Length: 251
Image (cartoon, rainbow, N blue to C red; front, side, top):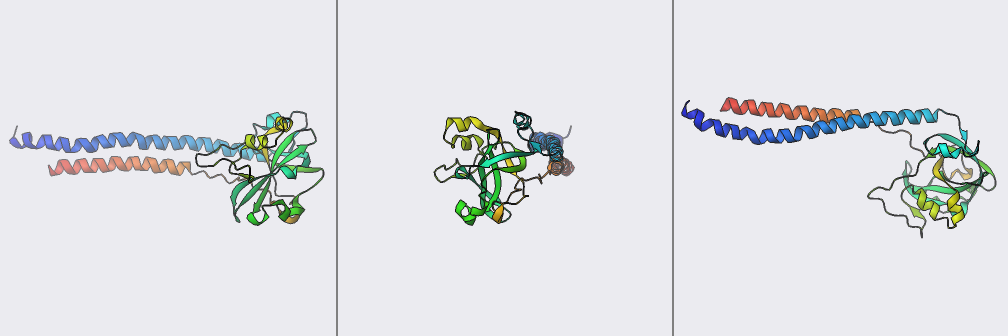
C-alpha cells in the first residue's frame, strides 16, 4: 500500500459521503411524489369517467318516485328536474369569479312540490346585478320546473373566510350554513343534502342570473407531473454518478 492510498483514500471517501447521503434522502422523496401523482391520475380518470357517465343520463325527476332524492346525494353531476317555486327573499350570494370577472353565484331556496327545500345555484351575476332589484325580471314567481346538475356541498379551504351573514356574503358552498340561516327548525329539517346547479337553458328573463356555471372541464395533468418527478429522480442519479466518476478520476 502506498502513502497516496493512505492519505488520499479517506478524504476521497468522505467527499462522496455527503452527496451520497443527500442523494439517498432525496431520491425516495422524488420517486414517492411520482407514484403519488400516478395514484392521483387513476383517481382523476375515474372521476372524469363518472362525471361523463352521469352527464349522459336523462334528467331524473327529483321526487319521483318518492324519496328518490336520497340516492341522488351520491350521484354528483346527475341531471335532474324538479318543480316548485322559488323563495327569492331568502337567496344567498356566494362570491365567485367568472369569465366576465368577479361577481356572485345566486343560491335560492326552492320549495319543491313534495314539500322539500332545495338550494338551487341559479347562476352568475356581475357586481352591478348583485341586488335583486337590479334583476327584477329574473325573479321568477309562481310554479316553475328547474333542470340542473346535482352538486355536493363544498369543503371549506384553509384560506376561505366564514360567511358574513349580516351582509349575505358567502365564500364557499356551505350547505349546512345556508340551511341554518333560514331561521326556522321546520325549514332546516326540510333542506335536501345537496345543491342543484341550474342549466343555462332556458335562460332567465332579463338574462340574469346566468345559469350553466358548473365547471365540467376538469384538468388532468397528473401524468405530466408524475413524469416530471421521475425525470428529476433520474437526473439526480445521473448528476451523482457523474460527480462520483469525476471525483474518483481526478483523485
